[in-house]
Length: 152
Image 1: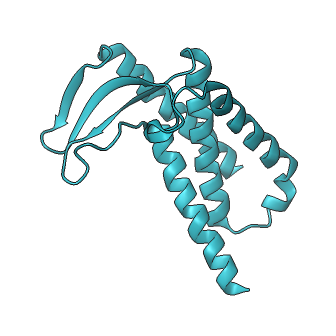
Image 2 (image 1 turned 90 degrees about the horizontal axis):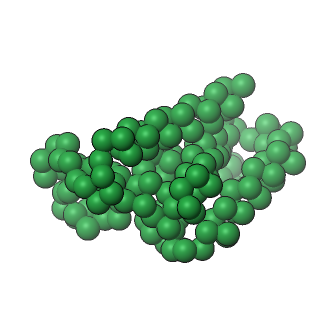
């Protein structure tokens, strides 16, 4: 039940932050949050995280749906994996769902707005909360799998 709640919380926070950005910023408008550290700049990203796979809307829409189907089909087996793995998976799924909602409701594009202003990340691509959840979840899954492999 915890993982379902985390999944829903990630989607809710992601959609809330994107709605606030849409309401408060015009497209390409920038607002400095912490000078020299963080700004919010609203863009519509036609690709995946960090702008990769730009304009591959069909693929980027189908991929999370396949992922959700696989998780559903293997839900019993996934229940045997350790907490960190399942936690990371819930983060990834919540982030993927948040971006999928955007893609379906925003002409195949995702709203990105987090703009890092400090070195060495000054020119880092813009991202959103869903991207952050996917990235952190993938790291947790990776280290969980490495740890499982080391234990065998």
